[in-house]
Amino acid sequence: MKYDLSALEIIKILGYNHPVGQKWLEKIKLKNQVNLPVTYCNFMEFAVDCPLFHTSDLWVGKMVPTVYKPWMFYELIQETIDDRKGLWKSPLSKYESLLYELSQLPREQWPEKLDDYLLIGSDYIGGIGYFGIRKEDLHQDDPPVYWHLDGYDFTSWKLEDEKLSRFLLRVLYDSLSCNDYDTAEGALEKMGWRYEEYFDIEKEDWAASKAVLKKQGIAFSKLKKYNSNNGIKIYCCYDEEKNIFYTGIIDEGEILLSAINRTEAERIFIDFENLEDSFL
Image 1 (tube, one colour):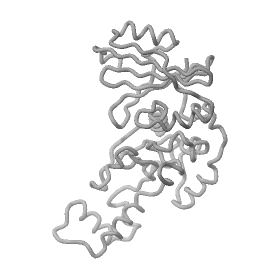
Image 2 (tube, one colour):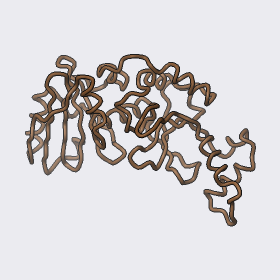
Image 3 (cartoon, one colour):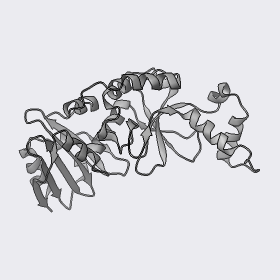
């Protein structure tokens, strides 16, 4: 059982193994006048327009309901300033005060007030914020990813993931687990994969649940668990011999584990009352 596959390795195994994103990436570089991290380029070369991500937090071009591509945070600020021209009213709020100050400065002086970011995604469910990579970090192979809550202080960015590779895995796990949408299930069915019910075990203790997972060759303690934006934990592993992906969620003492393969897909449902924090 493999617990540490990268996001790129996973989508290639799933069949998205054709490098279709080279021109897309070159246009992003040219339009925004930036270099792109190696991790981002290697992944997006295969993920551009990938249907697994059409309702995800990662912008891959073709999505639902339109096209989303990376762009610079400064461009977002400039659009906001342009929308407010002639509408400034005193006294200005802290939010508007910064915008007004930036509107009076040449773009070359903006870095003295706030950092620029390459925006690579947004909160798809809530639509309330952006994920970005600091412009000064774009030279790194695997830079940190930050989060900005839309409509608040433009200088307020919080660390989302220490590495871009972790962010990409989280987004992919979220999609595969069908946490919020069944987008991945529909896409994978077209690729010859299936999700189907297999187990339905309710209110079992941890020992029994652990035995069910062990039967599939899964060591639950080895699963890499990520926090989804809605607070639910998500995870994934791959049985190379059987060509099965196991993915699922943990929420308030319930574990949902789906098995995805090409010949017999399984869905495992485990519901128990006293899940210890140590297992999460």
